[in-house]
Image (cartoon, rainbow, N blue to C red; front, side):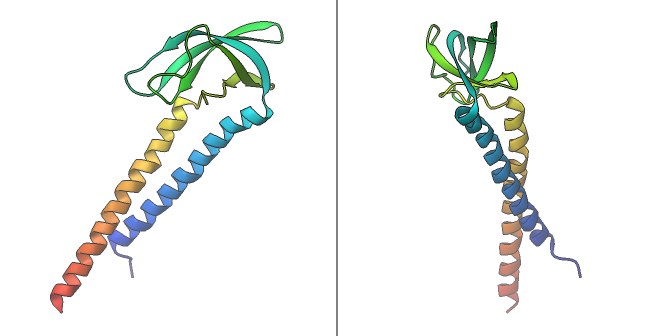
Length: 145
């Protein structure tokens, strides 16, 4: 016997929301790991890009192994917490100096946000549809009595 459609939607939606929570935790942990284990170098904010909606970004100049670098860090706020000329501590991965952040700007990759949106939105939609189907079934059962 096949389960009813609302049950499949409810289970699938709940599973997708679980995938969202686990994936979001991994993305957050990766940024926090740089704060704990990354190499620290001084940097300066050279440009601020304010956005009408998140993400905004800041360009930070810093030096690693004698090589001056300028990297754009994505902020999850409309107005980044830094201003041009601010001195910041840049945390970078010694194995990949392009993987950077500051204490205030986690610099989570934009693609990760887009990928996280899929299980969140689809999971939420399926849970709502599943609950709606469950309640419709309960109402129909009560009417028959």
